[in-house]
Amino acid sequence: MSARATQKAKPAKRKTGTLAVIGSLLLISAVMRIAIEAGPVIASEALGQAKATSEEPAFGKDLHAPQDIAPLIEAMKKREARIKAQEEELTLREHTMKVAEVEIAKQMALLQETEASLEATIARASVAAEEDLTQLTSVYANMKPKQASALFEQMESSFAAGFLSRMPPGSAARVLAGMTPEKAYLISVELAGRNADIPLE
Image (cartoon, rainbow, N blue to C red):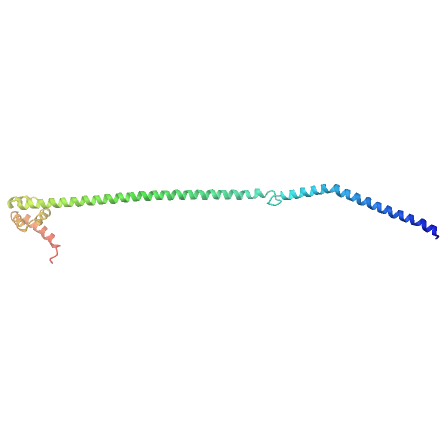
């Protein structure tokens, strides 16, 4: 090849390299433009997906999960209401028992007071009866033996023996002496029966 031919070939090669660089630049520019235009769309889609993920129910993808626990919640509410009712019933029973205890205490106090009053009344009546018997026995003992014997003759044997046991021995002997032998015997048997239980020592 001659020197002139070599000189013509060099400009052609330099022209081809320049076109390649320009083409590469155009391709890069196109890719960058596409990337710039598609960026917001991709970012919007990514943001929407992230938002959808964050708003996903805590129960998972099963949309029926809240309905599934509804019976459980209802059962818990019923159980709570039942426990509350039982607590109220126990409180009412406790209050009733306390009221009953107070009332029973009042009745017991009243009963004890009544019993004490009755015992005091009986004691006073016993003292009064004893005083009456003592006074009546003294009257019989101071009567004339004949009058006393006639009176004791009409009494029941046990009743007459009760008065004679209270009299001084001398007065009782005079009354018995003025009575009929049959009546005097019956009264003596009553007196012996009463004295049989008395210890000799």
